[in-house]
Image (cartoon, rainbow over all chains, first blue to last red; front, side, top):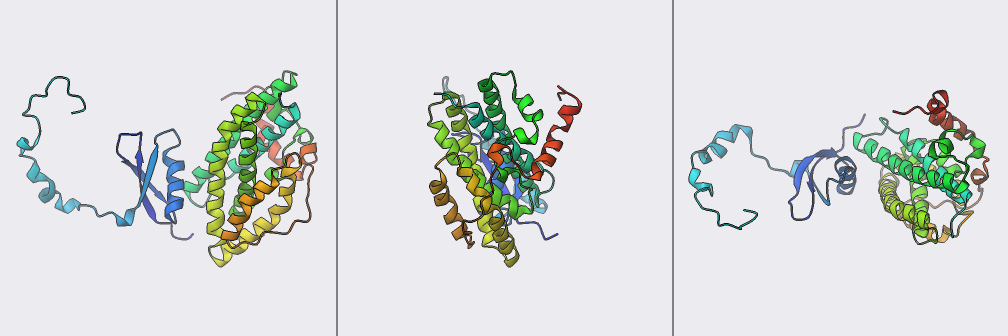
Length: 94
Length: 233
């Protein structure tokens, strides 16, 4: 058994107006094959209108070890949340 | 103008037998992703087969539905092309069969979509999109195997050589071969494969004279229905 093909992360846009969302990953030897595989594995039930595949190796991820330094400082900054405003009546999609 | 029972039956049998063959890849492909891809294609074929066989049964007017046509006929009554009943062989062989079949089915369905028979036009319009994808998928693998390693090239070339003679039968009842060649030849060329010379051209599927492989395939396809008539999941 040869080594499995490289891993690709798959992002699917469910419909126009929404952004691509990470749905999982697949193996493929190259980008075109990755796109085909992603289509077959993740959009069989009309889940999407657009697919991105990204080499998993190209993704730079935050480290779990840095979790405290990265995310905790935001915990006590409630003033960053837009919750101190009255939403004018009739404003949608806010 | 409506099509004849025989014409529609032949198209339905092509799709049904192709579905059964591709379904045999389930759990056996080299990667899970390709496993899903091949069985997706099998399900597309099965979907087309159901529509076509149902319509064929109505045209015949003898009360046979899709199940009666799929499960209760013997090999001599099947009208599918020899190409679809040939064993899967290795992955290259399966890809060669799919490439040649999908290129033909795409053009055939496209023709039906613009034809006079409204029911067939609907089936054609739905299936042409599926065949286009099957063709893309087969072409993708033909390029990678043909223009891949020394071994993959050798096996892809040998698959193309072995299947090529069976492609002549695809065009016995239509004039689609020039368009088919215009699709297939550039793919082979880009994959650094040699387009085989035309020569031996086995046929007989359309008149019920099949290879021995069809009987084994049908035995597996039909055994449950024949043992438990009318069984449902």
